[in-house]
Image (cartoon, rainbow, N blue to C red; front, side):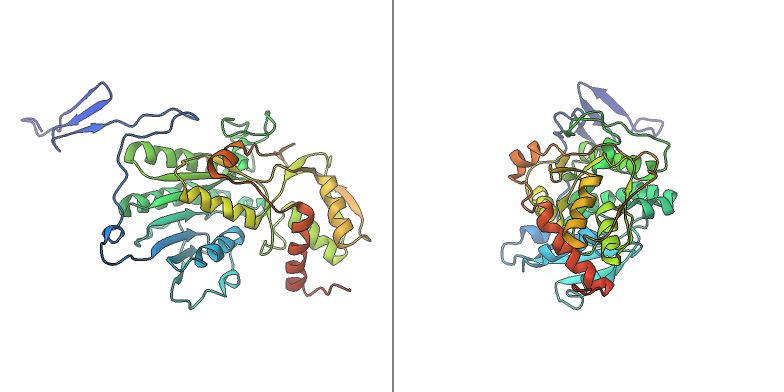
Length: 371
């Protein structure tokens, strides 16, 4: 600080000298989709992690943990007796029923909380899943969707910085938009409409990824980013508007399967247990990401409808309906990085996973197998 009370900062050769704090700070380096190394040291975790005589449990926060993917992740994490799991969820799309087996368990805690508000707790890892992922829900309140992606992610990054936690963001294949490259590798920057009806989600997740890497470079935070492709399985919201849940619910009700025209658009479908395995491998490994997690098996919407019809209700019809704006024409993950860096690839085939989801939907809809 000079005679006028102004803090003096000198910049040169990638170093910053701060006279007020009397130390040299190394500026973060790294290039987009290249070397994401940071020279900043990560914040120190709780002193309990360094205890010589008592090894405390790993305290893990799962935001959005009452949702479809989040609740399956909680199930896997709770299988480890050394984990204590805290779920923060505002129940906009999540459901307590998804977590009923853990409520009251001594290693489990459930908090009704909106991530756009500050959360002050002590944790070692953060799985940040909180955000509506279905178009019906994220279009319902697009401004809130953006707030959840931006302010919610900022709040979780602030928490991770304060307590020295590693944080994993579940991003999405929607960051690729309507891709011009097929299949989509992590190096592809995408083809996204910034002002469309889906932009609150697509661009919100892109900003969330930006924030993650800025905290990593600037503050040395340990981050992980997973880009999740279409996932299906038990506990999906029955009427959430996503294609697999739509088709199964329609087939069980004896309704026509509504395929959005032209029906040739493609998706890849990953069973939820495979996805959860990938998320945990990413969190526990040394790789920052982003890493695609999805099943590279590719199906047109017409093929999916025909498969659901064959497996669940051969008597229903398939009906073509008008498409929604900005619907991607094709979506298929390049999972080369996941295979090489995580040793991960999906195991459950679509024809094996659909009956498992059917059984869950029958139970919740009260539809007997013989009806």
